[in-house]
Image (cartoon, rainbow, N blue to C red; front, side):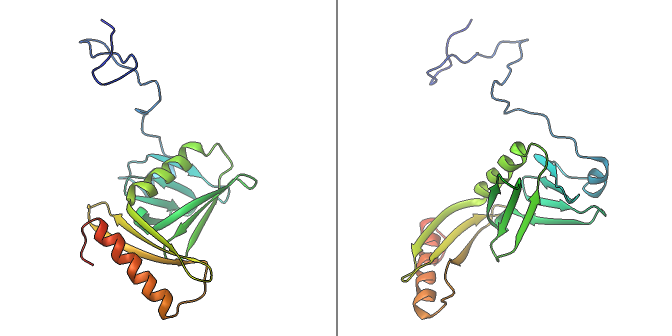
Length: 189
């Protein structure tokens, strides 16, 4: 009765036959129920979170991708490996997702967005295996990221940020940074 689980400094209930352990941090939550029209557009989706934006489109976070369902039911599924990051603007209640290729998706979220924004962050971060960054002389940044897709395949992506320069020096730096990132995880360079 009572006690602590091995390796834990705090009291953690031990498994007792016939008793249910309740997770105090809400980690084991139910799958969120999608609105009917979104469920019809994504019949096989296993959502982690979803939010309907002010424009009427609905963002659905799954393990493998972000699905954006338009008001007319059209669906765009974007794998997490294609996202570079996301920014939250508290003043406008807008989540802006940045794709690696420079594209963006802005979702103005009128309701409490915490679960949705946390799920987006977790899925983008989960696709990252290793990141290497180097400053570009004269300003800007070169960033190489090794990503893992849903099938477990590793690939690398290089971004040149904050500079319009793409001369030989910057391209050589990009190749060097990518080789370092790939080599760090055992990919061929």
